[in-house]
Length: 462
Image 1 (cartoon, helix red, strand yellow):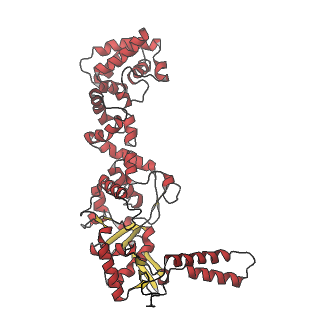
Image 2 (image 1 turned 90 degrees about the vertical axis):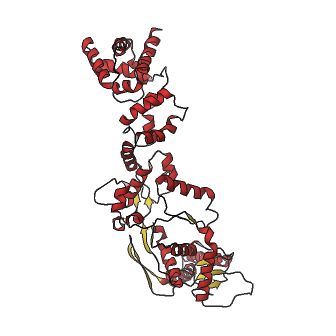
Image 3 (image 1 turned 180 degrees about the horizontal axis):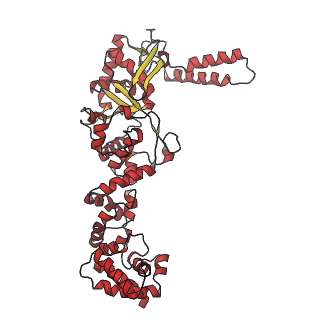
């Protein structure tokens, strides 16, 4: 929305520096999800791993500038440092300690667990000529660090809270922290909008821009989505992947409209088309508080967009659901297509909507549920037989003609609509949910409708 609103470029980068998590399957899921939502990048996706040589080149340049250094601390030494810090923190909780002893232990723990400042940051000699090393950023020494965030406002921390972060591992591969900065710079990124769980990373990344003399982009950090209970969204709240919502029966335009409104507002308007959103979107409308996922609200928005959907497109989306237990027969498809424009409001997801057409898919002879069998009493069947004769004489099989015929039959026989309608509905649907009976008869078609009635009359006669 931001890129489109400002006439800029929307770029997609797959950040795959974590080899264990960045599988081909994970990348394919990202790309498929983006395509489903219609979030098409203006350039081909960039794989971060393809630029390792460039990342290493920048790390080497920072070494020559003195803004980075070689650090010979081993992972084992760093872990031992953290373990000792935790031990001292736990020891400070022991009973019987004096205030002075407790304070001393906590001071030692805090020093050990503080953001790491390497003893080699000021050029100390290597422990051995062939000792392995990482390349670390020489973090800013003191003072305040300030970020003017497009959503969070002015955010300030102490420079001492920034560690000498690793940019190049001992095996020569870059870390995310270095790679993301180099790639943003080289791709010409001017605005970064991301989750507020990255806000701390921004303070660690800006010194890399400064170390290279580069202009940092503007940053905006959006609050994460929480579950209905207010806790950070997790697997226990249900579907997490984009494609999972597709499988749950939501339309992509509904997902976009819902997610837009979940974290952003413009007056009291609840639903936006993509064109409206592009025209109106701004960072000022993004709220700072975490939004809560509300599937009921998503369902309402999805219902809205299902009603607006083109009939042919909607049928194409519903067809796999109709054919879950077997291919549609031509006559079944014809019935569904006749009814589709009139039944679009019968569900909040595609699967719910598909179930509303079950009475049109049912194969003869229909299975009758308990309520349907009850409606087909001997008395009800007698009335149904008389009505069947009148229906057979209709030449124009339309809901209007059918409704008039049923009304005339009820009047002539001194019957209420319920006395005729209940056994008729039972014979036509088997007790499955269905709307008004006259449209049901029209959608079924004359031959199918009379055949369903005959099935029940013949069965009763036998």
